[in-house]
Length: 148
Image: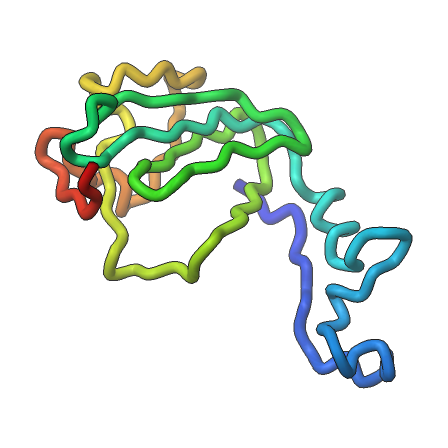
């Protein structure tokens, strides 16, 4: 994927005082939206097959998945106890909204194309998978940290 844009949201915002005494400059509202929302809306593009897989051990839905093709402006919420994967169908900028800070020591993975999952990925050829994800085990061999 080529880099399509970089949204900068740093600095003290000293040139915008007194507005930035109580909030970061990128969160100052303009016409009903925080300033940072304008460039993000311009950058987020459609064309993503997004999938969540239930990995809660003991769940009657263990190994089942839900998947959608996202259009611009839509999102799929992936709750705790689900694995997440996506396939970009075109050059895409992906925006993650999270509820907690990233914790590398808790990260786990499962093989993206594990036949037991039965996920229908739209693209079948010329798939780009990063090195870390190529090493993921199948669902039956994976380590889990969620209980039902």
